[in-house]
Length: 169
Image 1 (spheres, rainbow, N blue to C red):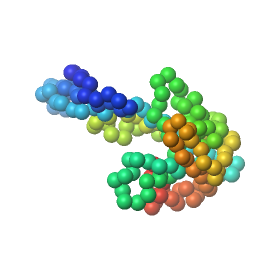
Image 2 (cartoon, one colour):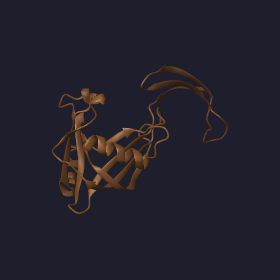
Image 3 (tube, one colour):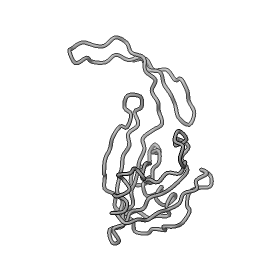
């Protein structure tokens, strides 16, 4: 395999020339691919088992510019993983920073590669037991230009929002 840096910034792009095993035996001819690197992503859905409510956040997302409707999206608390930081610590830190929410016990929901044809990114999702929440507040880090509105909703309402794709982040 040949690997060359094509771009390096907040994200990175590499140009790979690879050969791989073929189903019918042997190896492929050399294939060139662009490889987008941004790191793994961790998402956490805070859940209050006493009230049966979940915490979602709403924030501006530049990637939604392709749509003609609002650039504000409702979704999970999520962050690109930091090297050396455990998933538990990252989930707890981001829940506090983005939603003023304290999360205790975490349980995995899913782990998957959303675009393995061009990116090694793995998304790891967790549900976290929320012990303290602050719905109706605006949170986020000024240094990261975050302006995040915190929602706390009954589980049934959140599930009903999935069909019309009102929760899309």
